Amino acid sequence: MKKFMPLILLIILIIFPLVYQNAYYQHLMILVFIWVAIGSGWNVIAGFTGQVSFGDAAFFGTGAYTAGLLAHHFGISAWWGMAFGGIMAMAVAFPFGWICFRLRGAYFALASLALNEVCRHIATIAEPLTQGMVGILIMPTFVSKIPYYYIALALAVVSLICVQVVMQSKWGYYFLSIREDQDAAESLGIDTHRYKMVSLNIAAFLTGMAGALFMNYMGFIDPEVVFSLHDISIMAILVGIVGGVGTIYGPAVGAFVMVGIHEFFRTGFFGFFKGLAALTGSDVLNIAAKYISHAHVLGFGILVVLVILYLPNGIVGDWNKLIGRFFSIKKKEAAT
Amino acid sequence: MILFEVKNLVKHFGGLAAVDNVSFQVEKGEIFGLIGPNGSGKTTIFNCISSYFPVTSGNISFQGRDITGMKTNKICKIGIGRTFQVVKPLGRLSVLDNVIAAAFSKAQTKHEARDIAMETLEFCGLLHRKDVIARSLPIGERKRLEITRAMATRPELLLLDETAAGLNPTELFGAIKLIKKIRDKGVTIIIVEHIMKVIMTISDRIHAINFGQTIAEGIPEEVSNNRAVIEAYLGEDYAHS
Image 1 (cartoon, each protein chain N blue to C red):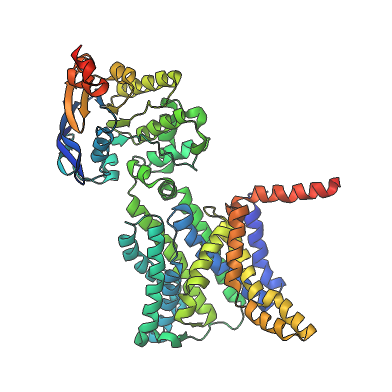
Image 2 (cartoon, each protein chain N blue to C red):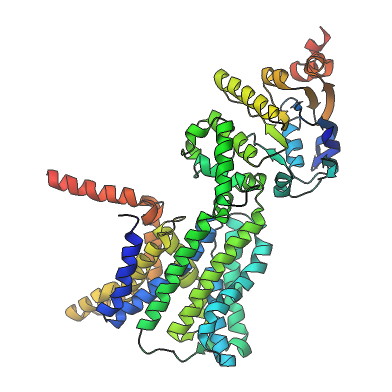
């Protein structure tokens, strides 16, 4: 049964937009799929290889800008960005990894944070190329959301399969060895620098593809959106942590939960505060409703604390514990 | 036939000479013991051999080839395996996965790596523990896992760093048996050890160092009767009698 779960879920997801033609939920699901790809990428480098990266937005933005600039400057379909975006993200990852993988642990994380900021500033300053803060606008290919839905779903599935295949191979064993003990890995004949590079490039490729899809789907990007530290880099980490660091399906679950929570805050608890303000006519509540929708980062922070305290291995990693707790509550209820 | 040679090895940490002009040669197929009191530089020599530290000066050669400054992972690939004094299991992986990760250094496919791993686990007597998470092994078996992992890289020369420390008498006996079994397979061994009973029974030759300098070399009986060695271990008073 457990073996067929992903397959059943996939079939449900394929049927979903045909049965339920609500553009809003289709939009949310497209975001979830994009985050599955980004989260899977992050999970390869941080979850499996143990090199925590705070710079995923650098790869995401590079992918998005590659797609956008191809369309903007050369009039090539932005869909080519799906392939080139991944490759360009790898072109950013390669020199970065080459230099910064000499650093370990927190120092590497800080370097990746810097990479994020460097990319954002380059995109802002290089106006002739990127139009700076004006951003890039392209014509969307499709009016309906359904084609995007299936492309995003395909990307998510490809990412998950890709990670699964990699983790079953020699590379997977090497990534895990590096995570567990880098010195021991070296003594076992593993070129740790090289395999960290491999891992980072896989992550960059997946994230870059996701970025290119984001460009195609949203039709508009600017440096603040795609190179955003808290909306992309930190969100990628959250997707990984909430879902389960170092598990294949963790990012999929994490993406679903995080996009949900992000939306929960963006809409002010699904319009709860706005409704309450309208109902009572209170100005205070009205202002609160406005600020709540910007407070998602605060919400993320609280969530991370809770997850680390109660589910240190994420939802997927601690699934049995979660189920056990749920059933023990039910049993208690039944007993009383 | 000389398999391995260290010539005039010097390693300085700042102003401290941790290893000061040490030279020795290891014959193919022998068990070569390296002894010395705490802090005398034994582990530093191992770390220099496997290139965790760059050497200050001197040469290390293996099979007639200069390997000084070669990368750590290359050193494993050319056939020098090692274990760590402070064991470094890949904690959250199973024992089998630990060994498979090591076996990939010689294997091409996963199937092949698994075969090598299973064979090595059986050889080292850890097969019954293959599905246990490495972190939850007791210290004796962790030390054995270190050896198993090093053996799975199919080394010609094995560096054992205090594999007997912290073992109970039964485990100690098992470790000695295993080390002899590895030698009988044709693997040359350099062993660092504190427990004299172990090193004296299994070594063919012993090299003693103190404060980073050679104080004696020879067969176990010679070394254990050497004045400088007794002095280093027991103090000057005992050396006179």
